[in-house]
Image 1 (cartoon, rainbow, N blue to C red):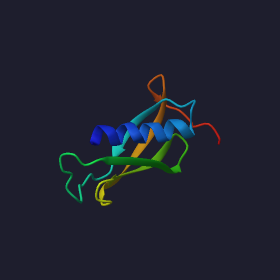
Image 2: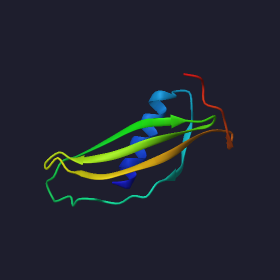
Image 3: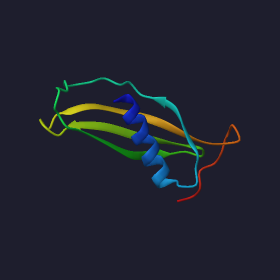
Image 4: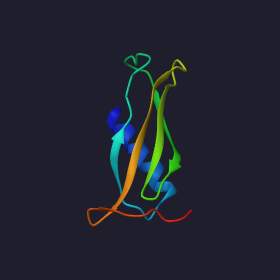
Length: 92
């Protein structure tokens, strides 16, 4: 699920800043709050919460569609890079 969370953070950042080339700088604490059982359907969501000059913070959370319970909630910081260096994000 951590890989999916990283993919969703990348997708949210890229959809908002389509000309950026993002790498994951860090993830917040990743605690599972409810168990996921075999056969459960899990939905993972992401949303850009804030931005700075070269990066954005993306909230990522998961809901067990079978039970309605939240499975985890965390955040990722995605940084725009160009030629191995941080690069400014385009204006919205």
